[in-house]
Image (cartoon, rainbow, N blue to C red; front, side, top):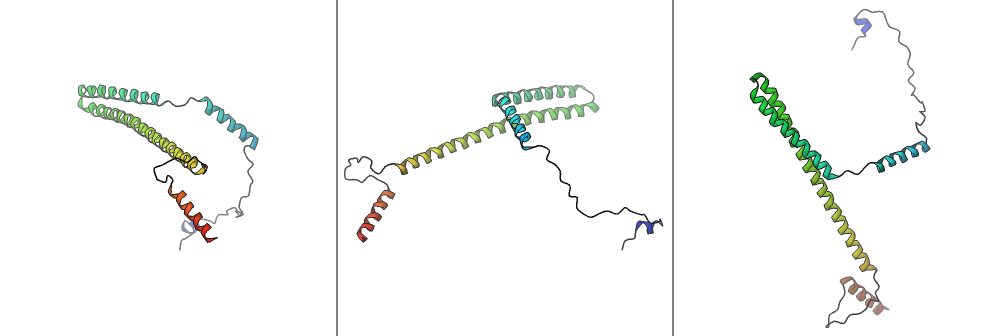
Length: 176
């Protein structure tokens, strides 16, 4: 077993304060009242409405400017690295590599934003298509059965569900 520190180092016993093992049951008051929270939420909504919507064209232009500046800095650092002493060239080339990495990151971020926008547009088109499909089915099922009859050349115009309903209703009438 383990020895106490007092025994190991030949120290006199220490008197430790007694600690109550009861749980700390302090009721913390709410920081905000419901009215204050409502006022804060209204202020946050006002701020959101005041901020302009993000325009993707400006974001794309910003990415392009940043990438262009990084590539220019890369070219300058590469030229400078070729003209300085060898012991300083390594740092120049490392900085140039960092600038090229920044340019690639900016271009890839721009591409990923465009891909996300395309995905969102596809999802929107899919939802609109589903909505149109539901509207069509709703109209089809809710239309009156007393629609005008059209003349045909000996063919029955209708769908399978209408035909099954007629057959089932005729069978029920025959049973009665």
